[in-house]
Amino acid sequence: MNSKYNKILLALVIGAVAVNLISCVSIPKGAKAVKPFKKDKYLGKWYEIARMDFKFEKNLNNVTATYSLKDDGSIKVDNRGYNYVKKEWKQSVGKAKFVKDEDEARLKVSFFGPFYAGYNVIQIDPDYKYALVAGNNLQYLWILSRTKIIPETIKSVYLDTARKLGYETGDLVWTTHN
Image 1 (cartoon, rainbow, N blue to C red):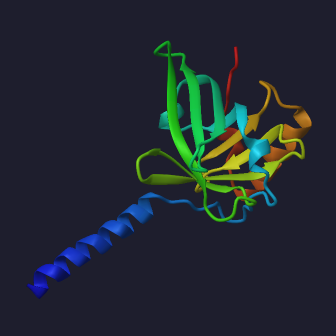
Image 2 (image 1 turned 180 degrees about the vertical axis):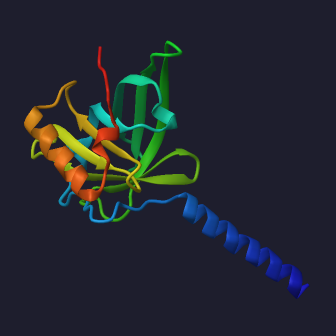
């Protein structure tokens, strides 16, 4: 009986560790999330200017992310983009929660049940028009704007920040909006 209990307990612990590892909500080494962060100013529609490409956004242009507050205090994440190869719109709806305090721009985002990934706003202008967002590691990076274009001065600053953190900015995909 005791052996059976120990096996169940071990399986639960292994499962919890696996979920924790899969649900990585870290921030790249050397990066710091924006603090103080104003959640209400960040809500709304953002245009993706550039990204490190990955399978969920492969072949997408006209990419937007819209953030809205849910009744439970979490943030609804509504990502849309047009797959120019398949000639169809793609949409992913998920949720985001703050990792710690709401005044620090470290969030965890989920599109698949209990599995979360890091979403860290590491640079933002005072008017919340342009943002640099890092994922868990150096494979995920986004430059966002409230409009379909970004001033060269902001773009240059954000690219410099990303390079200093170790991002290969030459690998960025520059999103087309048409």
